Image 1 (cartoon, rainbow, N blue to C red):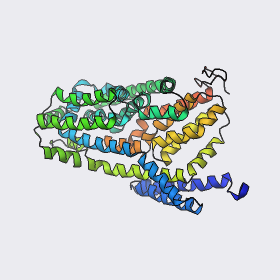
Image 2: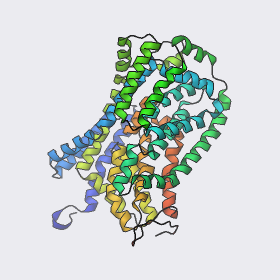
Image 3: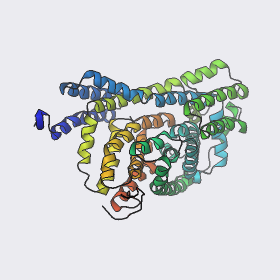
Image 4: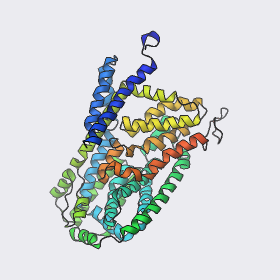
Length: 474
């Protein structure tokens, strides 16, 4: 049915916009769920369908291509960081840095308190660095090794790492998403961070309580770590406390606001020098670990599986997945389909609670459909900014909702850049750690509850633009 001036009505536009989304869901079910294929081809197939529909709808191909290229170019820095972390992991394992982190960690942490320790330590590291990816790629892989040695299920360990890593990624002023969300919403950085404490603080507290209870139960059953693992590490690598100076140096660089890429490059160079000095490895062995990853032969099947990782080659499948996902998102945005879907959701937002709910669901949906957390923040931030203003709500409420959902759920979607990275780096499927990523699951729920009950939903005073608290639904 046509609208005014012969243009399609909104209902027709929305129906067309949903066709690529539904196609993607069907493709993913057939390929991933039924047959265990990677989701790359599903995303590419849905991109083709979106492109065909847009072309039929008279959208110029040059515009669609520009949108796809823009979406991919927006992730190039993240992709390069991903590649560097693959190199860093390979070099750090071969240089004995990761084995040293595992070895000394096994001596310091009790299995009963392992999970809350992982969550708290990851929180501190990511808060200092502002990067969930750097946290997972350094201390995260060490914790995975420690957990495996203690008999802790890998999904629980990965969930604790991710919860802590995303706490700092969300709350640190050094984080890119923490800077992006208030910029899109129309507020300032530190107002945004202070406002997030109300939702993120209780979420982390509940998560640590759950990890403590779970850790006491599982850690008590796991018992004492196998001493043979430590012996295998010590016989395969020359281990010393000073090896831990390299990850500390990288964290110090980031704390002092050295950008992520130079910091990672410094970590790779320092790791290579450390391996050359402490492990007596050759340049070609280090280059091989950087390119193809390290292939362990410690005599322990558990350690060989754990330490055989890293390298540039190992990250390329993940890079391809990210490019496929953001290309689909770029096609959907260029065709105007994301705007149509978001507008459809916005039309259902009649009150403050439903507005927050719509924001959260839109950001989660874009993490699924667009495959990129930046788009999950920028697009709903742009679309809902006027709605929050018209409802008299301070823009920090929008920026908080964007991070409570867009930032935190990116790691829960297998083909999203966050989920693809965490899955590959930690060596475990997303579905295995998803039930245990407590912070990432709890935070969006708390944000929605606050929206409906009005807790900390600050309005803007129409006279002096000064926010004040309210608990009444408006």
